[in-house]
Image (cartoon, rainbow, N blue to C red):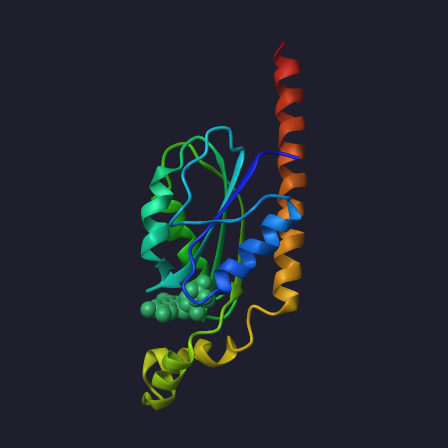
Length: 178
Ligand SMILES: Cc1cc2nc3c(=O)[nH]c(=O)nc-3n(C[C@H](O)[C@H](O)[C@H](O)COP(=O)(O)O)c2cc1C
């Protein structure tokens, strides 16, 4: 197993739950962004944020530039639908904030329900308001669910295997070059 660090930012707990599932799968303790420090020796850093205005939330946005020379996994929770343009673009926004020479090993996303207060606000919005129309505030209810958590754990294991294969490939290339 490589040296993992799992760092998350979360207000209502959705992203924290995903972080916990991933961290358990790779046998480390998840760290909240408020307490986490960049760790020397970490080989894979999984960073999780909730979407705020279409990008990583402000706390994670401040943490991402501190990462350098390491494999990174980006994971996010959002109200928007999975694989929506909005959610996918957010990965690019997060990647743009990373420090130098980070390799993105993979990305994981799932919906995370918004708080009851925000749901109530959306319910009152005019039907043609873009936020109300997007509908994520409704379709995200109940997420992350058990399936999302299982997918997050499976994804972390898959990323560990992927890194192992990449290491083996790099070793083979190095041996060939002699
Ligand atoms: C102030 C605020 C802004 C948000 N902006 C977005 C957004 O731009 N796109 C989106 O899909 N979800 C947005 N959301 C929904 C959250 O990203 C989502 O519910 C997330 O799962 C919350 O994560 P947490 O429980 O870890 O805090 C927003 C929520 C809040 C409170």
